[in-house]
Length: 376
Image (cartoon, rainbow, N blue to C red; front, side, top):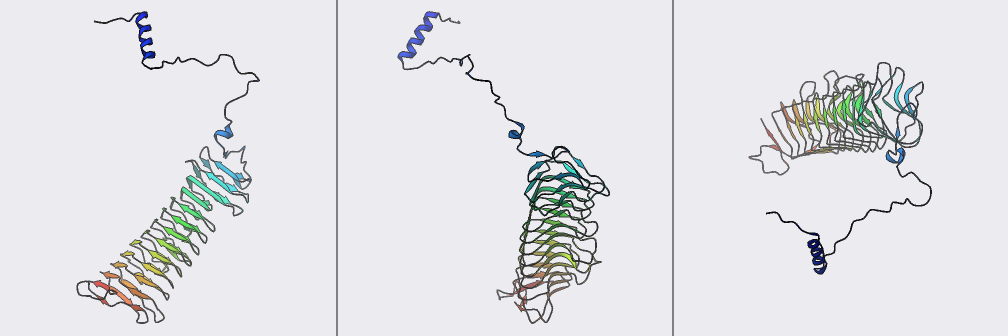
């Protein structure tokens, strides 16, 4: 049966709470009278909310050679897709000061007769982020830093970076129909966590002291040119680490294949499959360790690991299903070749006696810790 509480009961209840040490507070509203003085705005301005500059005909008006022109350093962003125009770049950066361009998920799309997608007219430090640059007859992106960018179907390089470039988490696909590499970077650069495939002249090319790591590099170097056409091509003293390098090279250019490692370069823990002519071509003073090279086919000499220089170390690699597994076949070679394994090649090892190499044998019977293992 429902029971009602009288006003008197409520007073008794409140008194009991106070007696028990329970404090009951009263909630009140603020003062109704406004403070003295003039009324001032309290909202944030647009520049407070978005402290960047929108790329537009008002903020970054174009020129005879560019749809949009950036003439001052700062941070810029797209608000819509951009379509190119004949004879023009998409965005031309013409300032010596650093510039950041956030594509903001939009596409910068070229047309026939246009030039570059993003043109670095003065060699500035440009950062390009988060979007797509495609179908430009010239280079797709010219930038010192590119992150989260897709560069595809551009006539020349997909992404072109100068010295100390940082190119990461990018997709670079089907560029260089005239024979250019997908990614080209200057000295002391890093290319990492990228997918680089189906670019005409080659996949990734970096200059001295650079690093290529954790990339998938596939089906590049299909357009023969007078230069070397490889999945990954390095100059001096570089590192290539943990890359997957598949189906690169062309039979019409014997200087093509999976990886061309310049003098002093280290190639470690890479996996190579189905490249033409050569899996890894190693110049002098190289460190070729713990790679798997499989199924180099066609071309000549169809070698898994080809050592062309001196003073290198070729160790703990596994090579199978190639014409020649590991070759250091010149009388001038002087390399260390130890602890490798090779099987299923037409010739497992072709090592000239001037090199220092472990004996060749089978795992079951070999007792030498430096032995190069081989099987049928």
